[in-house]
Image (cartoon, rainbow, N blue to C red; front, side, top):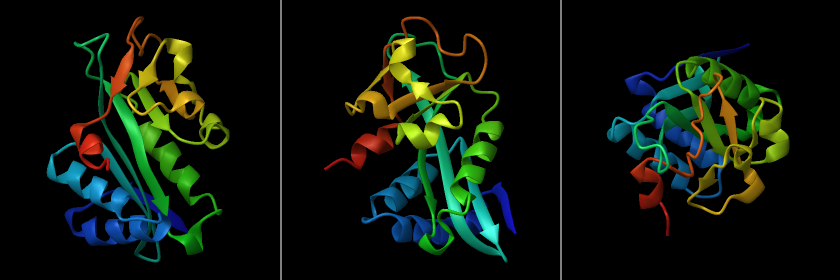
Amino acid sequence: MITVRPERPDDAPAIRRVHEAAFPTTLEGRLVDALRDAGRLTVSLVAERDREVVGHVAFSPVTLDGAPGVTDGVGLAPVAVLPAHQRRGVGAQLVREGLAACAAAGFVVVLGDPAYYGRFGFAPASRWGLRDEYGGGEAFQALELRSGGIPAGAGLVRYAPEFAAMEG
């Protein structure tokens, strides 16, 4: 049975291992460490099976260039599951519980597969006039967590500076 809970300080090495096993490079693991070190993990959840961390999801703050006073948006990234536990609903459980934990936020953005994230209610961010720094096109999606959570004319979404530091 999978249980999802908030990250604890002693989970950091296991979280890094999950990201390094799930992705072809160490980028995502380093990103989570950098967000944690900067105090920018708004929500950080782990999935456990038999007391082993098998998955992780992170949410960090985003800003809106067209609405500088808005501080209640978050970006979902990254999410990872150990290969042996993939395609069993662990990632979906992490995303669902992460979105519930972000309920106080006005909106969530993600850069990912529209077919996957669409099932959680994400839609093309362009629907709200949002665009991202990375040219994500249709892969850049948003989910309004409350009516009016995305202000009109919000424009460019900027992720935490740790994302830009990971480029290149």
